[in-house]
Length: 414
Image 1: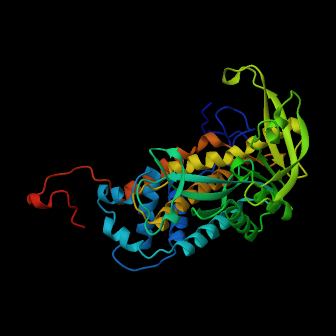
Image 2: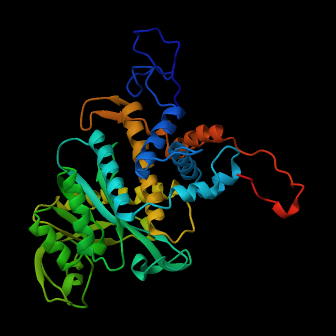
Image 3: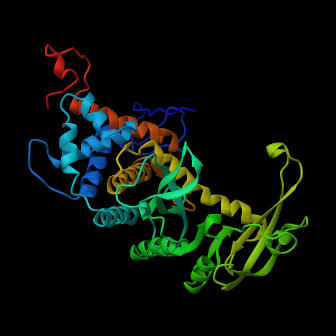
């Protein structure tokens, strides 16, 4: 049902919605968010991400605005420069971004993510998910092969730029709180250690850590046990007659204390393995019992809730889809520019969550204390409002003509 605010309601009557109810609409008719506020906040975060001040015909705000507009349109900065009359030229944007350094850029990105998290997240232990996202890359590395991660074919390539992120699982406030650039030489233990360090530096306490099956390894599990971190992840079925595959046999859910051994180092670790059996009920064209294997710490959810509990982790996959919707497109080989564009997109997604929580929610009793009106500001509308303001600022070119000097056809002259 589409909602519209009833401005004709008598002041103090308590009725503010055309549906004549008051249980899901803001009591204050002035609450809301405008396109100008969205553009101002987006430019503010991207400007701080750049971390540089300079003087010239175009200010740092102009460079940040070009990047924000490129993110809202899911295109490249060069196209924005070509299609707007008052925008800086491509050369100006490249010149202003030339001196970025990867490590300081990542430090700024994580500091800004921490600032956004501090204003949104409560001061109590939280459920956190950690995972990789792989962005397909067609080309050669800029300096060394270490910049590129090889993986299964996707979009016509086996080469990827990889990033690891941490994501909070909290109703209405699901945001990214940490970002790391992953090199091919980085092992799983180094990646998860770096993300946990970033989370700890923010003062975020982990109630339970949700991981992908890629982290089902002896060294990772031992590290989590030594840190006394509760975790939940899928267990990989291994072995023919024995191993974890034998635990998946049967029609009842059960928990078994299992000892894993690393084939590479010989190290061992003991942990609970849970066989959770559920019935497909016609899903995927199947009508039979299906058994899922999970690995966890000593404290874990009940078996009848474990599958639903682990599904909370899929929110981080949704964050990667949103990241793709506002990630600036580029063909550059430079890893630092690619990190810049990924970080800018994550900041925009967090800004969208913050605006909904602060401006488009109503207080209520119960967990969370607020109802967020998700349908009022979906992410495509958020990006469209940002695009509208910046398109007006730089004046989209509405007419083109062939210049008299044909040798200069296509040049903008800026």
